[in-house]
Image 1: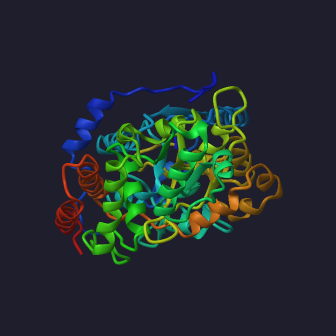
Image 2 (image 1 turned 45 degrees about the vertical axis):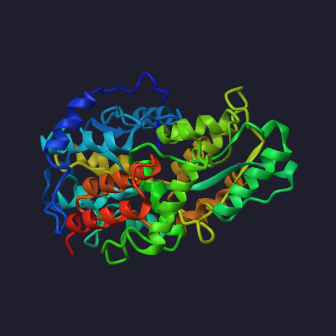
Length: 443
């Protein structure tokens, strides 16, 4: 999820990405492969949980523009507890690196952290974030996968705010013109593309499909989804690596073949979420895997989208049947080294409230973490895909929940990227990945 327009109340703090990445790399990305009970602050014993005053909110780039509205509302009602937005890059790996750097230097500049759901274990185990005071956070009505994503050693470390599940965006006008139904498998999708390109003149030069394939966290998500949809897993439910099973290799093989035969365009190897969204909005793709935030942007009627009113969403397709989304989303955490944590608690509860979550969903189409909003009449009238999205989240599979997630995701990206570049055969790549994961994930 990314964030971009700013109000006069927002103060943007810019840091040197290259320097922070280097420092984070020198620190090893945090902590060893084995699971260990964390030693974070005890809220009951931390005087900062009694303190109020200015705090910071640290997150990636706001492409929706709605964050400014939320912070203006909070700041207008809390003149002595102003929230300053520290904007990080839109690349998830760079966000993580900057948050780790702040923690390793025990900096108090960062207060509330907007963290990818998969970082909870790593940040908690290393003592970079606090176990949240659970008596001050009511989890009633939240989707269970979102609660699970914020829990480590049976304690809540990150509060669910934004959830996410992958969906398949598709051109309704082109599918209807060709008499094609939304696909449930990748083979059906490839056949649909061939039919559409042959029968719909406007689509003749369009590419078939793309997701997120640059070497960053989005590639981990996309390869995990391909593997899971083939009946395999990168790690099993106990956390043991299972990357070179026949099913897992089949998932990697599909992605390699899709690049080789042009199902996925060559240039998509450089795409993150925003590049893929732009290609779909420009009319260059028939099918596109992305997150819910795309829906509002692609439907914009200000001339920025060529596909407004011409697309819909469906569940992700898969290799051996319907696809499985990787669980996405962002939770809010409190830095162990922050000040004014009583204000931080109140701000998180404000951002996670049902009223604010509903307004945010209406304005941005981001996925809410509260179950009731998926059947809210006003929201479902505006976003008919919410039923599809809820199913995607409820059946989503988490990425590996490990302490040294930075090393694990890099190993997954190395294997996938060399394969889609045509440099490594899928079986060899997954064999190498299996060995790396066995070394990284100590059972």
